[in-house]
Length: 244
Image 1 (cartoon, rainbow, N blue to C red):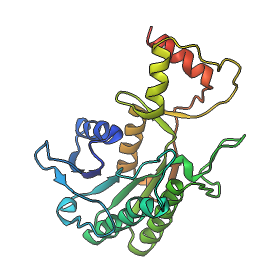
Image 2: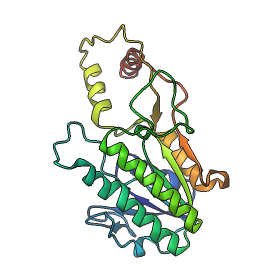
Image 3: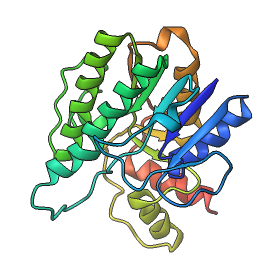
């Protein structure tokens, strides 16, 4: 298949493109900086007015990773509007143009934050969405819009809500924790009995590929994880062991 991947140079996108190529797919990379590979499509901005015609030509599927990511302590005057411009309006614009070309499968990378901000029992795909912050709301609005487009056009939409993803090249909070563990800092976490789901990068890209290929994935929403929730102390010990 010929697959358009947006956000192709990011943490997940880079690994996904390599994974898809290894499994025989032709990848069209949509990126926001200078092209580095033959066939790269460069966009200065991704929003509700972006023209995707060149990138979509001949494609069988789209994996939409590009997004305005969750920002801690956002100081923007209207953060919801900024998130909606990239995460909602740009997503729906791409999906509409994809449907018009006759493209079959649209895999949207959403977020577990659509389900909420933590509770005692595990989240499920059938739960009522409960997004709380601007980032999660923009992702949920995109999901709803995609469902409408799917109903109107027949576009096969697959929605994935991953938790925290880790693996080679990880950044943000997970990288900070790794650095603290590596330095041998004493961390006051031993008595914590929390448990959370994590998702390894290799598992994530394999799941995305399956959602591109498998007929039964059409119209589904999936929550992904490694299958073994861990507490913070367990995670720290695992990192410490792995780093020697």
